[in-house]
Image (cartoon, rainbow, N blue to C red; front, side, top):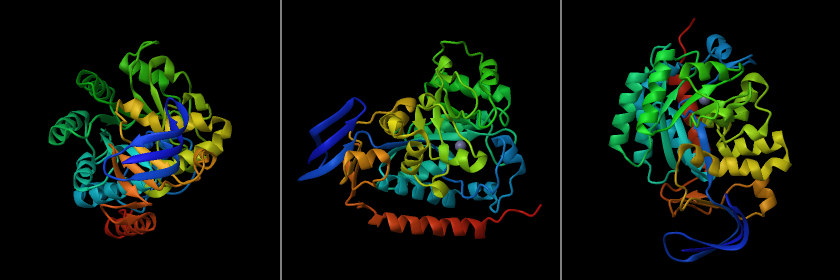
Amino acid sequence: MEVEVGTLITPYGVRHNAKLQLEGEGSLYVETAIVPGFSDAHAHPQVVDVGEGLWNDAYEWIAKRTLKVDEVALRADLEFSSKLAAAVMVKGLLEGVTMMALVGRGEANVLAYRRLPAKPRLVILPTILDSRAGWLNSWNALNLAISLSSLDGAVPVGLFAHSLGHVTPASLKAAYRATRELNIPFGLHLSEGIDELSKLVSFLDLKEGDDSRIVAVHCISGSGYKNYGIRVVHCPLSNLKLFGRTLSNVKEVDALGSDWPLLLGSVLSTYRAAVKLHGMEHALYLLDRATAGGYRIYGLDWRGDVVAFDEPLEKVIEGESTPVFVAVKGKLLVKERVVTDLSLNSTEIDKTIAKLLRFAKDAYPAKEG
Ligand SMILES: [Zn+2]
């Protein structure tokens, strides 16, 4: 299939009257297209409730928040957790997300990926959290990562340490070392309200000029992450919701994350918010981070990943357009705003998500006290 594109945006620049090839017969004309599509570099598909209120930092939020849903019980339900992950992937795909890095319940995320006929590329990062019941320590997470990657080689698996405050230094070190030896991604929440860079540097014995390849999510406090080869994932929407503030230096940003896609929308919403926050003068830079950014930090190929719009470049770079066509690995998965293999459009997936959120509150209410 030949796709004629009025304006094509790629990581190498903007081209007019370009042609793209996809699988299948026929031809298409689209006004604007981006290669690759949007990448969500950090998402929790099992987060359905974050509580209310403004906090100083993530540690205070986790310690003092009141949730309506029992997260541990929800995550223990593999089937329901995988339905949530599937809804996140389908919603993302309809909004032009061609790559996602999912944390949370690894088995559920892989199960959803394997069952769905149409989905974005995926990176799975099981979460290590030593300080709480119902989570994995680094040894169990590593075992899970190895068994998941042998189960389905199509999905790269890495490790995600929850945060410096919720993972022991020994666990953090072991997990990081294992990811370097296996050459798989390593991520963590970092500096979510408190500057934690020097603590991370000392725990992992990083040196200035190192290419640590650590994927650090948030980094709303502190600076100098690039000096250690740390890749920063910016999640402005969840930061503003929890803390009323977010990362201010746009040049620190390597990729964008929706963080809680079931509550805040796909990374397309994150991108739109980032442009409003940092200004239109940074739009093309942010668009690169919102698309190629996630692929780069996880080392993924983007061949055949395209998102296409029937609106002009200006609308697309404001983040105000939703795509008409979306292709992953050269295969057209969204046609005329419908995931054809599932006969699902945006309105229907939003209804499904609302239903899933209601079910979570009914089936897994938080325990009193
Ligand atoms: Zn997160």
